[in-house]
Length: 236
Ligand code: G3P
Ligand code: CA
Image (cartoon, rainbow, N blue to C red; front, side):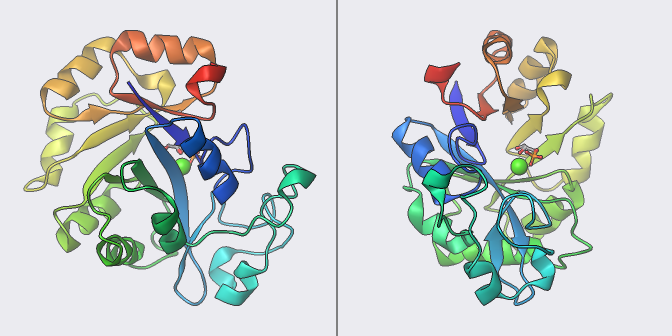
């Protein structure tokens, strides 16, 4: 089972920062999940929220802020004094930071009407850094993932799902002629027979977000391909 560090190992270090990614690398994680938004200048920045207020010392929305404004934010002090000075990473910086043998899971937040062509920018960054392999781009906005496949069929897409699909086979036909690399359901909506069925159809299953031992054990029993977790396996 693969262990994908959710926003980096976000229980251990400030989420979506180099510190949390370093923690994941040092803990032997198989991969790292993180979220991207677009600045006023069109750059992709790594943060979970659309607003910078919760996880930095700034205020406002990423889309209203310039690259220099975002670059001066402190993304670590809110978590602990030890992390004061952690910057908000850009996508390209993260692509350089994480070793190529680690799986990357880039989540495009589901507000594409706010970020026109965000999927095109993500694709450009992956091509620029030669990082299409060993990367999954996921989103709750499945139409955005379809458009990404139109830009570049070689990019792996993962469908985030917080619902139990009634007829997934029929739904997935909407993605033709493209393939769906993986499904990323919430832990609460995963069922054993579905995991097997989806895997038989060639898809991986990566449930999110495992926060405790019970979830981790249950997912392992269900035979999932991996879990997206806030904590390293040794702590669960
Ligand atoms: O990878 C899935 C998970 O990250 C989605 O939820 O809110 O943590 O981005 P959220
Ligand atoms: Ca996410």
